[in-house]
Structure formats: structure tokens, C-alpha cells
Image (tube, rainbow, N blue to C red; front, top):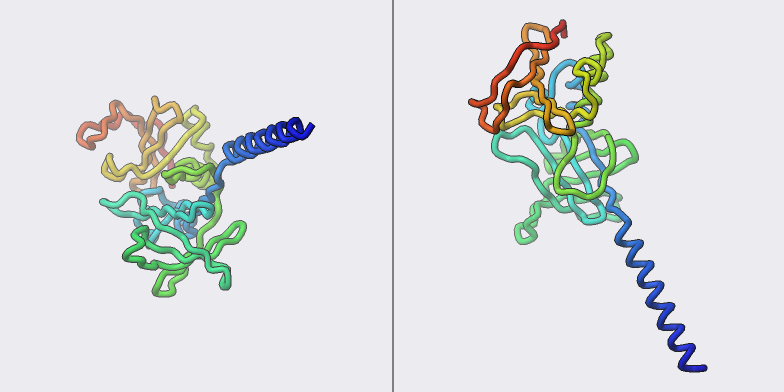
Length: 231
């Protein structure tokens, strides 16, 4: 009887461990995504490339508090995403933001998180407000191209135009400032088989299709304009 109870006990422990392992495996890390309030305001009248340049400092952040990491992106011709590490200050209810190099251990600022708002304060005590725009599973890439579409659609609809999906007759759109194309406002679909360029010229916004696209700006050719109107 004693041996039987030991076997049953061992089996129960193994079963519980298996269930716990599965639960941990299936639980995704939640990453919160934040966009600079000045960048959001800028997109009411301008396009992503112009707004990235006009927004001083970082225009989007991607925070994983479970792994104490932060990715940030700013307008820069050479630097893509910058990675930082977080240290929680339980007394002040903030996160200290450091460079990833622990030997240097340089603090660049702090962040305080709310449900819909985040405040980033640099070492010169300048504060920047970021607005929450969604959450996702952990990744090493900042995803904001679809939020750009959402914000641009609001600007279109505010001017009594149709949404970009309706104008382009396509769903699953993305938009970002494409550095490889010489900082063009680039729209593409989820399938990756269609793409367009947005431009503002002489107070008018126009949308053009692309005849061919390579990651060399000299080889990218704009075709006819498919939409133009006052902006």
C-alpha cells in the first residue's frame, strides 16, 4: 500500500509539473506600445516622415516590463531601434531607463506608466508624453505601421475623404517612413504584393503606385497618380 501511495504521489507531482509547464509555455509576454503625443498631433496635417523629423526625441516606444526591456525609435539616418533596460523603483513607482551595457550603466531617464499614458523624463528633466496604442506578444521589433494607418485614416475622414482602405481598395494596410527609399511615406499591404507612396505637394496630397521596387532608391519608379486632393 505504501509503495502504491508513493507511486500515486509521484505521478501527481509529474502531472502538476506538466500542467504548469504547459501553462507557462502558452502564456505570452505582454508588450505595451506607446506613441509620442506630439507625433500623433502632427499626423493630423502631415505624413509620417515629416512627423518623425518634427518630433524631437523618440516618437514610439515598445515596453516589456516582464523582461525589463525597452525599444525606442527616433528620426535618425543611421540608427534604427535603440534598446534599453529597465529597473523598477518601487518607492517612486517609476522605471529607471539605462543603456544595455551594464558596465557603463548610463541612465538616460525614467518612465512612469498609466493605463493610457506614459511619461518619459530624460536626465535634463524634460518630460515627453506617450499615448498607449496597443499591446502584443514579445518581439524584437517595434510595430507601429498599422497605427500610422489608423491615424492617417482619421485625418482623411476629418477632411471628408474616404479611408485609405476604401481609396486603395485594399485591406490590411501598413504605413511607415521608408529609409531605404530615401525617406518616402510608404504604404504596403499585408501580403506584400502591393505598395504605394504618399506625398504632400503644394497643399495637396497625392497617392502613387510603384512600378517596381528594390531596396535601392535609384531603382524605385513611381507610376501614375491614382488619387490627389487638397490637404
